[in-house]
Length: 129
Image 1: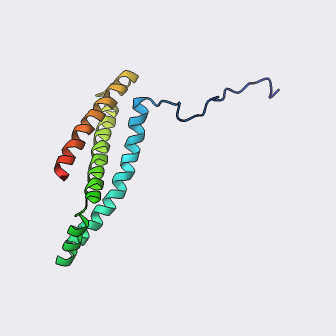
Image 2: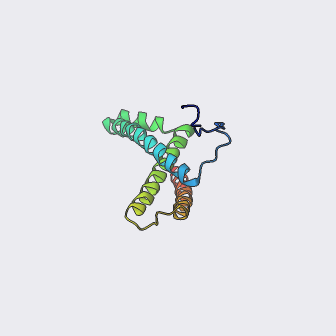
Image 3: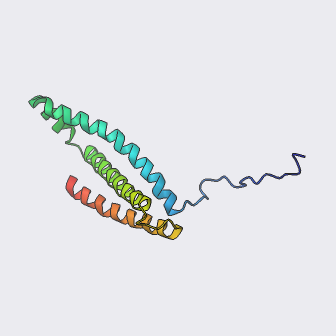
C-alpha cells in the first residue's frame, strides 16, 4: 500500500540553481541584520564603556578606532542597522494595512526598502569617512 502512493519530493536540491524571490531575500536579510545589530550593540557598548572609563581608556578606544578595518566594520554595522530599521518599518506598514498583502505589493515594498537602505548606507559611509 505504501508503494502505491508516490511522494512528491524535490528532485533538484542544487542550491546554486534555486532563485529566491526578492521578498524572501528581504526577509532573510532582516533576520541577519537583527543578529548583526544585536552583536554590534555589545561591541559598541564595550567601546563606549572603555572610552568613558578614564583618560587612558579614551586613548585606548581612540586607538582602536584608528584603523580602516574598524571603520569598515562600523559602516557595516550602520548599514545592517539601517536595513533592520527600514525592514521593520516595512513589516509594520504591512501589519497595519498600509501596504497591501499581495505578492506584487510585497515585491514592490521590498525593492523600495532595498533602495532606501542603499541610500542610507551611502550616507553612513559619508558619515563614517
